[in-house]
Length: 168
Image 1 (spheres, one colour):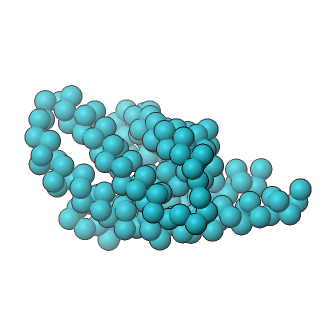
Image 2 (cartoon, rainbow, N blue to C red):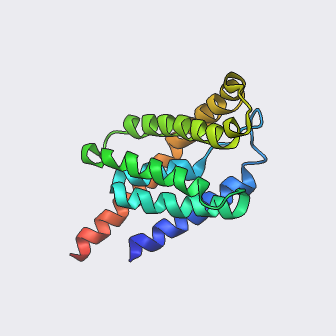
């Protein structure tokens, strides 16, 4: 129950920071995707189903606030959370490089999915422009932020595991 409350608070805090404060520190009109970092980190540390549900609720928050179609962002985040959750089997408490790589790959996939559903289906075919101006800068910015945010999320996860083991 405690973990559920902590994850809900993490989702809300990341959403609020991403939607309010990051507009002021946007570089080249690109902001890092904190919710994606949260979904990838949670899926990597906790597994497929937790990643799926964190992706669902994170995506629904984005859909209800900014989306044109309810469920599109939820689908993106759910898919990313579920597939990254397969890597939980190789989770190592000491490894910080693998989750950063997962964040980079997930952000690339997220960017391409966003391009397909928001631009390609509307006959805007200039993928190189979108890749150069939006996807790659967002990936770089998100990876830089994920270095710090993953360490924080990892510490919270370790503390929750420690208190759970002490209670048992």
